[in-house]
Image 1 (cartoon, one colour):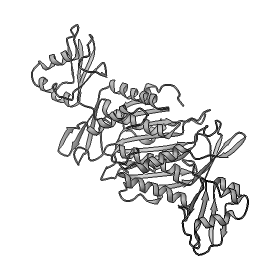
Image 2: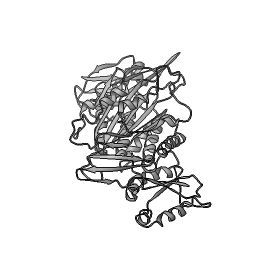
Image 3: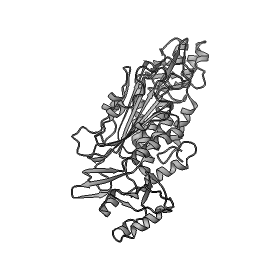
Length: 82
Length: 82
Length: 170
Length: 170
């Protein structure tokens, strides 16, 4: 399984702060995103936001990242701290 | 009269922290410096140091500055605070 | 005075209020027992909640973060700064939760032998924090609340450091 | 929070020890009674006596100054910084007399709406102080004492600000 997390505006728009998603061998971050978007609205449009950031195991990565079983994947908007 | 002050290394080398010097109409800072140097050593060499800074009435000025009776003139080395 | 790598404990996230004096107590370079005094410069930055930002009448803000990742990123920024400049110590403390105008959001401090290094390292940590640390601000006015948008100027400030090769921004 | 010109009292010279916490008490932007909260950034600089400088084993230093002129120059630097950047407040406190390694020589703090302005103004004040404020350092080692020479790097740092037109150094 993959542990998926959502933060800030994304968490509010999806109405959920996280979920478990089945892992498949060879799965990339881009595939996970595509499967999540496949659940219809609000997933399709929310996860299509152009500036979306993604972290795997708490490090920001790009969409070609290969996922391992048990990974923690987070989706969030550009950061605004400090 | 002109109130003349010396600071730091200059004060130590001259062995004096200040003095009163007669003012003359039309006197520039360069003339005052020349008169002070005219007192022989250690004045001549001390006041010929290349990086000497001069302030008139507590503002740094160049040697063309015209002096007024009662002015406070200070000579000192480059500053090293902070 | 620490001389090795800055430990993870120097990067903190807390929901309790930050006070400048308390922060600096955590950042005294000498305990009165030191044998060596290499630090010549301490630069600190405090970020405060303003009453204007995206809208003119901000009454409060709430900071959300990504627990675990936040601390890692903040510590990583301290280590990066220590790689770029000669530092004896660095500290970053970021507050989360709900805050009011005037409250301190973030405190950064660095100690170096040289003032130029201390200024550059402190500003670097802040500029990078603004674009890489997973915090999100939601502002409140009297009749609304909204997520703050990321600023282009923050992205530019961070990018300028990455282009800089001499330890200073272009 | 002051909005007009920074008053002369914000530039001080003292022979008693400076402590960071006491300094920041003088630099709290808000008293809990404010109506407005324009300050988003406070940057502070503390300069400390190191145990190495021109020679490797400095045991103490004595700072001489030009009473009267010093305070004028320091206040002038605060006003110049306020002209160049948008500042709500600025403070400079410089110690004179004999000091030991670890002691604070100088403290500068500035408050601004924007962090870039606060960093630049604080560094500007320090760089200008180093070349324009009439202070002179005499260092002691175990068997000698000597006047510190002015540094070329300090003159260059000050000159870089005078060439800068966009509020930042070239």
